[in-house]
Image (cartoon, rainbow, N blue to C red; front, top):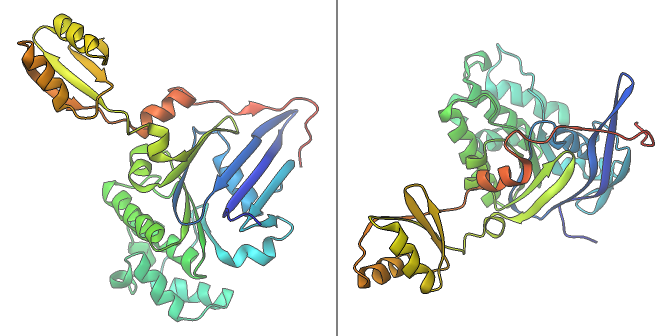
Length: 316
């Protein structure tokens, strides 16, 4: 049996829209290892939310296989669903009830002990606001309460679909802290998000999809190639600086007002070499790869549109 928490193989989903058949997921192979935070990234219309709904049994695949904790879904979903918590759509809470009362009612309906409410509130840092009415919560607090509701079952897998959408910086920071703590506690978090800087800070691994297909997957540092040093170098005479650096075996790219140097372990090597040639560095900045740059290389600056299914596809 596989030790993967989430595993899909050849996953397809086709929707009917009038006379057209829209291919939302196109042969997706998704693997999510246990523990930590796994980013699920893609442009709008790339199939992220559809994939999440498929995994949760909210819609059925056209073809392909899915497994959660090694069990095939949707066939064996009842056997595994108690290990899964999710926030996919905006939750509905009673506005005049407190956060605690809302969670208590939900806990009673799903048969979990009242102690689970206190634990969930603590995990999302809402214990001090638990007695306040839900209608007075900020957007970030409302989203954290939704996550608390998903944590009532003490799940091993938490699926979050764009949890920071529409939040201000303080709200985003609050969700970030919650997600980081959950990942460090041993919960596997599948985080769908379009805020790539947040994902780069939080995620141990990512899967990037476009047009319903997997484009890249792996540990963040491996995908970004952070072990390859790139340094921005500013000098008064870039032509001679480039000449000496290339003779020393470095890869050098000339930009309008600086050089970009690759092929070194430590930036001070560049400073020392140029100083020996009488060229003094005015700027030396390590250029760190970003997930946004990698993402845009894969998907394009505007993202990939959703596909249109061929006539031999069947929808369900």
